[in-house]
Image 1: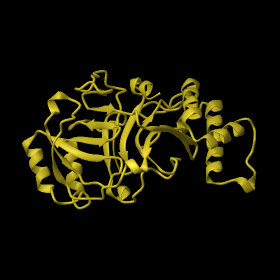
Image 2: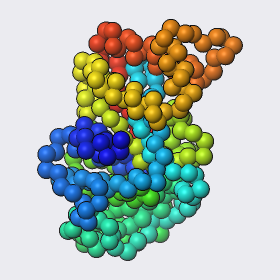
Image 3: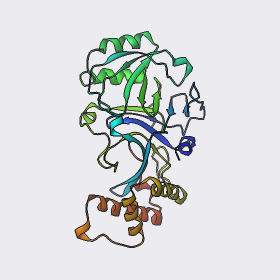
Image 4: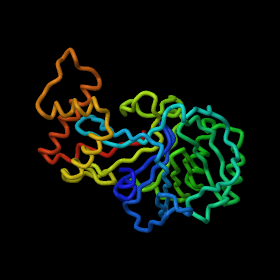
Length: 297
């Protein structure tokens, strides 16, 4: 499943956590190469991904919202493998010896010191001026220097490293809705969550990477398209295999015409009920304008 998703140019990927992550997409970029050392992944003109998913636990899920839904597959690790290092200051972290492009091997990078259980977020550069600006920030926190950090995130390479691989967003990459990009919000990060509350990740697991397969009602840029029953069926098969078994069974019962007794209703059953309703409506009415791809955790 993961290999097929990695091979699909319509699938997008994220690595990182709730409030700090990098996203990789290659739908519009035909210039795709492999990482420098042959790891599974892709490199484009604007960014790249290297994936080492063998130890991951896939969790497929759907989330309903007002009039639509999203879907994704989280690649998780046990919480014990994702300890929080605690927030710290920005610091020089030596040189990057695992870069996706040969030209970046040995480039200097700075760790932003984020309390991110999934991994680390670093800024990398070979440009003396960019490195000088990063050195000025060393010893201070991202929360205190967020404006300067965000400015440097457009000039330097943003690198998110995790136990399951890395995503790189190269300096100067356009802020495309479907291309590589990075996201950092100290306020969201400060909530201390590993993922959005709407994502039904089992207790004890931490989502480290995530991929979003093609959505039946939206293209990779989030634009509406006619309902695609093939894309819908493909993800339903993934959901049946890797989704929460209880929620999968409940959805099957509701699709067959069953109902949830009022006394048995809870947040999870109501969410699945809404999901079934909007998917039936989309399939029946080609209502593509009311669905979207999943947002970052």
